[in-house]
Length: 169
Image: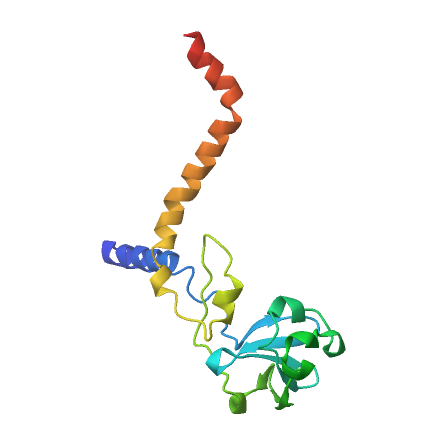
């Protein structure tokens, strides 16, 4: 293998490493799925819940945590206007996802998962998922921070051994 090919391979490997957080899987339009429904972010900050039978509910009036893992009959209606959760219509199945083009739900072009923490609910609800190029700095930072954090933890755990040795000198 010549030097140019080795350099190209190393550059491709480094680029692959640096892009490790960009698009860890296929893009999907829903941000949450439970045993009863899928949740979609729609325009104007609305949250739609599509039941297993295709019924589309506007659950914007409910925090997602209160609607998650509950059947339609058990949803807390008191938080919504007129104590009713609006039914917007029915969606038809389009492969493995629902066809929601009439409900102002955009298909994301990619998704991004931070390396240092799990995405918050606000980040998942904030609309279409974005590219991860703005998180490119996390990969080299993780290569420095994680080993330092491990060394500090080991040092703290071993402190009963090394601290007395320092004072005995």
